[in-house]
Image (cartoon, rainbow, N blue to C red; front, side, top):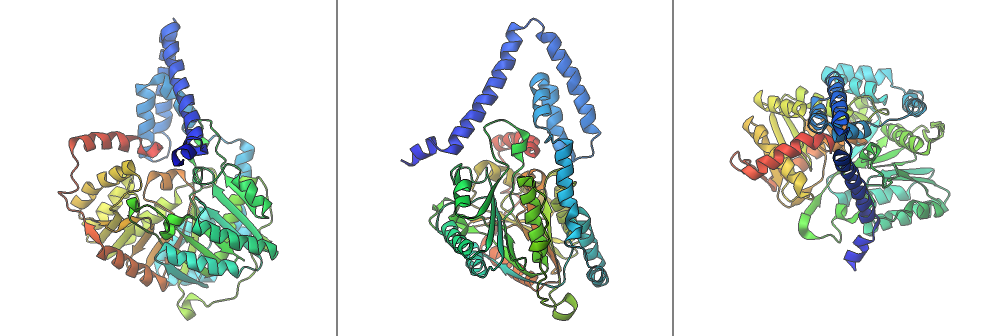
Length: 518
């Protein structure tokens, strides 16, 4: 029965249609080669076009790791490679679309301007931290706050309990944006609360990623939620047509309540994130999240409305959703520290790789330690080199990855990154109880990032992501305690264990070459 549901499910049917399209394209090229007397000239023309593409690529100001695979494809397979490059190398939006998107994202300063007094206070507190904050402001136009309380939840179960409690308190609106939703204890409990709130007159908006939830909910599930009174939007609706647009997914996970409380972290709305009713193949699913109470929740509301308006092709006034929050104290008076939510994603909404730069800044500024938990470790030369250099200059660079994988091929690629890091002095640990899904970055007891950002190309290049950067907040010590607890049940990987056999090495070479495009 389970097999039949899979066989006739949306995921299988759409995947099959995409494979048929790809096969038809390849067969058309083969057929053209055999029956067309002019194929030699066609191939020569595409080869010349391939050389032009290579010249364009080497002069583009983008990551070389992204350029090299395309160069290999267009030079080795001129006809197929050039066609694939022209179809999939970038999302081609119309000028009006780009203009509309940029207006939505550039207008945020009208709603959440940076307080100069808060920026000056941070500058006086720590010049390096001010530099990081200033970068995030430049890239996102979202300010740093000193009036926000932060609470860290070291497990998905604790996050889930807190989320339900806060949802029940909503009086004005609830915004929720998640990569995966799946019917079960977690989602059914949340949906029940959302329905109650709709009946109370609370505005509920919900956005989920269509591919992220392709195998967990039906294609018309969004319409079902709308009938319940929930303003639901599917991000980047997936159609069974090969297109580069489908490569950009909404991987963000956040909830905003009344512009006063916000949740963000690694957990989706599916039972594995709270370790309910799942198979033991991944062991214990370890995740984390944070709750912001205060001004920073306003920025989270803006981030949601930006994406929501981009998807609905609307342009609404954000001001009604940004009412003043009660002051919970300032960094100077109550020790709440500085907190700055930020987003990231592909062009044209984001003009640079915000998450990668923020992580690089943290690594490069670290003096004593940098701790990272990530489910995947597939990084480019720039990040790899920064982590190695940190270890070589005496920084305790420690990374914890899963011991039990959720995706075996990705796990092989993660493990293939171990050896160069270990040989440079980086400590790699694997979380023995199961699969660690937390995406946390911590340095020197001073700064931390908690959010949805994985250490792989999908998060750092293709996906829309979000995170919260913080400095001097009390919950940084809670994040460090959680890291120590994770470390206590993890096993350090030795240099000898990081060696790959010949087959794994050959497989890794191919995978790493094309990893930036996957």
